[in-house]
Every structure is written in structure tokens, then in C-alpha cells.
Length: 158
Image (tube, rainbow, N blue to C red; front, side, top):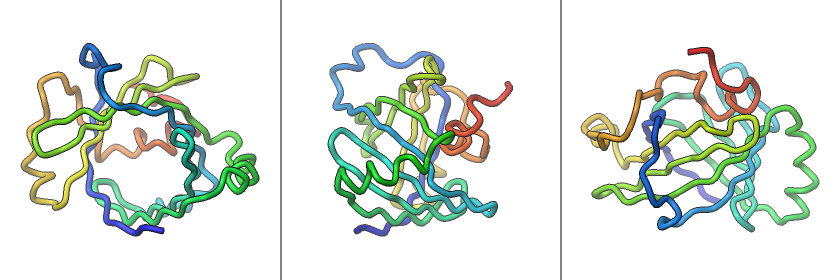
């Protein structure tokens, strides 16, 4: 089990960089078991052959995250509870100076949509971060681009 404070910024990507296959990547299956109106969520995630249940607190740029490893059997038993609140994506890990860009290429109903998230050790570093020129609009503070919203409602109207 791990508990961390996740401080991140999220951006829409219009055109991902070339040669994505050169970077480490895994397919992610993600579904939401529960979501409180205040923003707290319980998520299931399959990343490659690893399985997790995660509780994320309310928040936009910073959230408390508690993650517990699951067995495949536990994941499979809980997965049906995520019906109607699921998404699939391939996550690429791209080095960017002292950070790692997590570029998500969405599959299924969200195919053709791309986002990038960068995590930071402090609010100061998050505020000072200058994204690469291929990043598009920042959506960190827009809850319509949270993965729960994308999974439950699809892409927001522009």
C-alpha cells in the first residue's frame, strides 16, 4: 500500500510527438467503483499485468492518493462494479528534464484523444513548469477532463 500527495498538471495534446513506440508504455484499463460529489473517487486500474485499487481525494492540481495492490482475482471480482465508468488508454512515459511526461493515448470511444500529465514534488515546481511546445491547452483546473468524467461522460463539448 502506498499513500502519496499527487501534485500534477494536465494538458490536451493535439499532435503527439513522433516515435512514441520508442518510449516505455503500457495499456491501462481503468474503471470507477464510486465517486463522491465532493470529488473523492475509488478507482480500479489494470496496468499491464499489475492490478490496483486507488482512493483519490477531492482536488484538481493536488490530491491525496492511496493505492493498494490487488490480485487479478480481486480485480476481476470488483471490475463489474465499474460498468458505465470505464476507459482504456496506452500510457507512454517520456522524459522531460527532471520530470516524466505521462502521455495518454485513449482507446475505444475516446480514440483520437490525447492528454499529458506531469507530476511534481511541490506546488512551486508545478507552478514554475514550462511545458514543451507540443503541449496544447492546460486543463488541470477543468473537472470535465478528469478521467472519471471522461469515463462516465466522454469528451466534453468544446
